[in-house]
Amino acid sequence: MKISKKAYYGLRAMTRLAGETEPLSIHTLSEEEGLPEEFLEKIFQDLRKAGIVSATKGATGGYALALAPEEITAGHILTTLDGALVPFPCVGNSTAGCPMSRRCATQNVWQKLSLAIEDTLDGITLQDLIK
Image 1 (cartoon, rainbow, N blue to C red):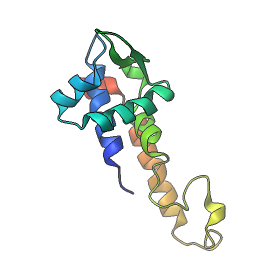
Image 2 (tube, rainbow, N blue to C red; image 1 turned 90 degrees about the horizontal axis):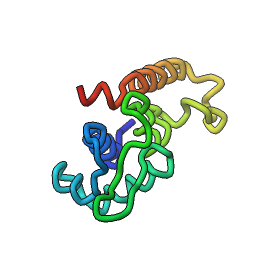
Image 3 (cartoon, rainbow, N blue to C red; image 1 turned 90 degrees about the vertical axis):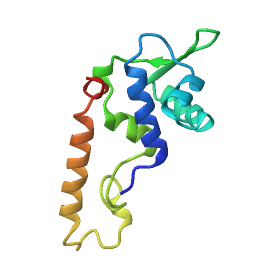
């Protein structure tokens, strides 16, 4: 399992956004965090569609959190941007596609690892990260 740059940049940008009281433009986030502006725009489109951020147009517009920082978890952000975070494709909801699922001696290990990752990321909020 590997976290993509999209998810890494998204979590960094969201952490920055969580510490702000006013909306921030993609341009400002890009410059101050050293992240690619065009890529951030795509990331924030996904986050907006998921209801995690809201967008305001105009001279003082930009992106802001749509929920309180204590309601947004790292897990929610990462799964929005990367999809399910599982160590192997056979873990989770689609073990039916794996020809070894009925006799795989290690599947229990990967399921436990997947649950530990999920529990850890869902236990960390943006509020925790900005403290």
